[in-house]
Length: 570
Image (cartoon, rainbow, N blue to C red):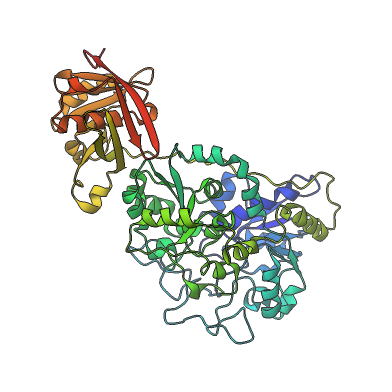
């Protein structure tokens, strides 16, 4: 059996289903990369890293395989000798996409994720995408719906796939109108990817912890497909704006970029573009995996016309669109309908305010939302047995006696990122009572504004790589509280230094090595120094701080005890 792997996106979808046959000792699965995708870069390395040695495409085409399986339609699949089964590599078939040979696309400088018009997958400007009357799958421009039109399914009058897998009968209806001969070999077998996501629902708490979501935080998953109309292509600064605006104790931001963005621009370039966001506490998920667990864990999805956004909505999660390019998708497709069923972001308004609104007002049972997301699959939980039956039918083998089981998705391996520099505002409450509300935002905001917001101070980790932040810091956080006094002495611009010590307590050191010990703050211990800072700048004496302090961070309320200590080295 031959697995045809066009790119990393297709590879991940094939790996969802190959275990249905790969454990059968009667079957050997070989892999080959046809080099026909504009996003082939990284595909062979992806396979090799997983112990799969690709067969050269010319040799694969000539070999007597019993079955070939693909999760894309590109290249010369029609030259394969064995029966061919094609699976979707996203949420059904929705996008307008035409075959264009010999031009893999040219990047526009300075705009990540954007390619010039006229390149694969991008319509030329000035073409509104009107479909031919009587032919719902194809626009007058000649750009068809990917995977459902003759341009993708028929070569020299011959149907390419022996079996075409669809996830819902609505796709079959569109296929029958645009390419009737392909409808004869279509199999409606549900969505194996979505089945895995749903099966992972009970692990939500595990995924949230792995992604660094703490008590009181809400998780926003920012999802972008590829190309100029995508979230990242149209609004490359959106994640940075969201991170700068978000209170660290209220929001956790995770970003899932389409693998094509990574492998067109290179992982190195993408990580450099995202470095400021990473420093602000944003987790950039790897292109291969992690996004499905993030969707299970999410409280809200901010996305576009990509499959990840649709899957998030299909889980019933509040969803809002940063961009809704209706002229890039078939309006009668599931994604096309979703663009009219969920709210769109107003880029002139505060972002978190709109996320709050969509979370509060979302009703997954409302129409047309409920009917649209029901188009995800017509066989919920049944994709694996249905697909295995089709594989073995084409292989002309009896199925194994064991059940075809669905697997949960992996726990994200990407460690959560905590910003090392905070802009902190502390509002003392109740007169002389030791109670305060603490609001923390990432200090990357300074790069947007150039100055400290009114009423805030800068708290910076001692290992902060940018010296300017250390020089501006009023509070320095040492990895070990025993070093706080020495660090404070080395940075004369700082008012206080703090750090954890054995047992989970935190020391706060001021002028003259005057030291306070805070107990009970846990992972939020650094804010104790911010409380002391506010107390002092309110012209209060350290001696008047009560032995019990109440700190509110987002929805969390911490009660900590305070004791004096002669020296930070004690």
